[in-house]
Amino acid sequence: MKKEATLELLTIKQASEWASEYSKKKVTPSNISYLIQYGRIRKNGSNGSTLIDKQELIKYYDSYLGKRELEWKGLLGEDLNWALSFDHLKEADTTKHVHRLHPYKGKFIPQLVEYFLDDHTDDYKKEIYFNKGDIVLDPFCGSGTTIVQANELGMHAIGIDVSAFNSLICNAKIGKYDFVDLDYEIKKITKALKQFITDSNTVKFENKLTQELTKFNNKYFPSPEYKYKVALREIEENKYGIEKENEFLPIFTNLVKEYDIQLTQDKYNSFLDRWYLHHVRTEIDFTCSLIKQIKNPSTKKVLSIILSRTVRSCRATTHADLATLKHPVTSTYYCSKHGKMCKPLFSILS
Image 1: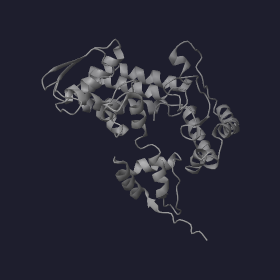
Image 2: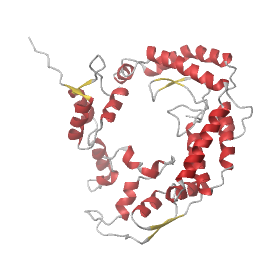
Image 3: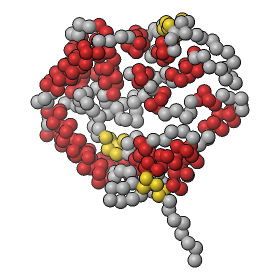
Image 4: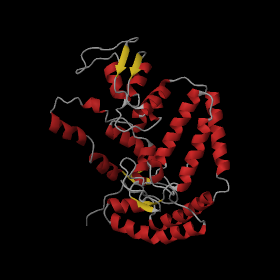
């Protein structure tokens, strides 16, 4: 009789240590928790403990380790400098400090700029092209990655861009600020917004909706079991998601009627009219009016960028459709990104 193989189970901490050594790059406990949460590997254990099968980890990391490098070298040749892919870096590294201030489509990572600006040489970079005190010109500066890295390396930098908003972001990233004033204005506006929506039916509606969604998701989309079954194709995600979306819709509709919620705006002429729910637009306009009253110009610029980032996150769209908007979403929906029922935002406060 064939003896069954004994599972080698690891804690999340042990799994992160093993994966770091196996993949030759830093894998944190949070990274391992992410794999469990999104159904890439199965959660074992009970009574609150989480254990991971080492063989599943091996299978997961073997499925992609070095795969991208081999594919690109197959397309472009063995002399490809794969180090410039910075494939080993986490998002936290490539969006370090001020580079995370505001999203910008198509920006390159700061490490790539550093590679060409700094004073190191290697097999590919034979010469040093820039030195401290030099002036670096970026004629299409975008969100200012080159400007920031030049400053960080002790160089002067000049950026040019046709977009006034890009210029605003660039200048904000390298400006100097009165942090006491900035903190004061942020807290003042947040307090005013809280007071503005205190008695709002929309806030009460969203709180109740969140409660109902939590109950529904716990029942039909238990995490991480549901995502793991989807990954193994034990559940047909599209069919199941649409079925549960339709099942929850009457609950949403009844809450809208109960709290007398106006979902869409009265007009549909501009981007702000089309892509923002009625109450969100009201809060945006209110906050914008407060920012316009700020006296300190540098504080006003930073608050404008904070509002812009907030506004970008509050568009009436699905979590999987942030980059290329398709159609406004005004009700709850099955979210393939999170593997559960989600909702559009009804307030910008959070």
